[in-house]
Length: 498
Image (cartoon, rainbow, N blue to C red; front, side, top):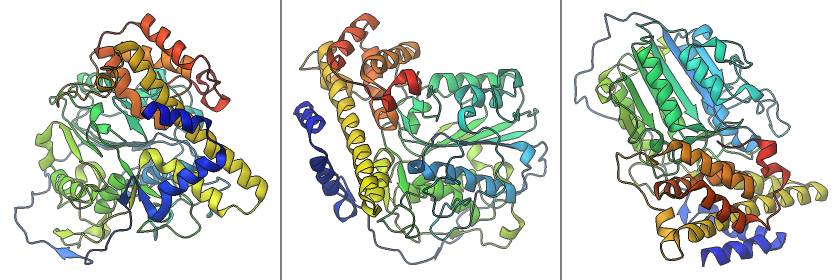
């Protein structure tokens, strides 16, 4: 049935596709989930229930930070806005530019669609967070290879960029924050290939073996970001990890047009991500010398879940060395003297946030462009882009469903492709097989795109079921031989995801 629906969508005229999109967007609902939610009472003051840790009198070493926005394009405004906000937070906390490494495509602030040229905001009433942000790795230099080189402090591995790396020493602490799209076992990057979990964990192990840091904290915003660490992240690397979502959950964009809180009227894209604005705004409004990592986790968990409703929102997860949660946040994010007098127990339950599945945010952006466009020619161009985007989505869904049936049989194929492994197991046993399957699929069927990352579980399960590369090639050829791959989804132009 799903395959027939996808096939109909592929052949549908643009007017019908637009009507279907309108039905999805009507009344501000995504998949039946209401986005306009009631406001809570402004501030709630919580009683002191535990002893606040003393500041670390033995603090030595340097704080380092690596900030990564893994996307490009104005429709992904929020990822670079998140990262720019993180830079401003750390800068106010006393970190020096020489110790903050920033990865972002840097195509948002000066984009033709930006209503405030040269300015990026991360909150509807927020100030500019773009000013002063270092341009360490931008454009084509935002790559997995450069990210790994920076983390390892190995300038010989760099290709382009400022040359800045994390030259940490044994007593130094490192804070890494990433914001973008993701899928089972992968994180997106604006230049191919994706970041694969096994490769990332191997780099963290190598960094630990070098003895060049004391402790490290990672915050990761992406769909299914828990899958990067579940089952493969050791707990003996002195690394604490918080992810926006579990291994099988989407993460969410927020401050979007048509939602509450709404961005300024002139914006047609989301300003932030639910988990990211939760931790960033939490750090903005607390004295980090009186807040532990666990304190922040507990507050961010509530806000990211939309106050434990999960009607929209996700489960914030923890991996790695959980004993580090008792440490004070300022050891990683620094201390802003302006927060010195803030009450240590201020717990902001101000609002339940309107949010959208990250994988659908591009449709919202295109719809907003179409709706606000005045010129007929421009309107038709946007409609064509929207139509092609929806058709490619349908093509990906249909092709993978058919490939599953060809490889695993019509009865078992769908259930095997969508099987979820028990907690504590990695998404795939053979990571090289996973990369190989992705390349084979993209060669015959076109690029996965940020939407198609949702199918990484299917590719992992193909490997977990022992399917050979030859069988995968035959199935992909059968499923996609009649499909014409447009240039924007041609991996020989875009690059392969693996």
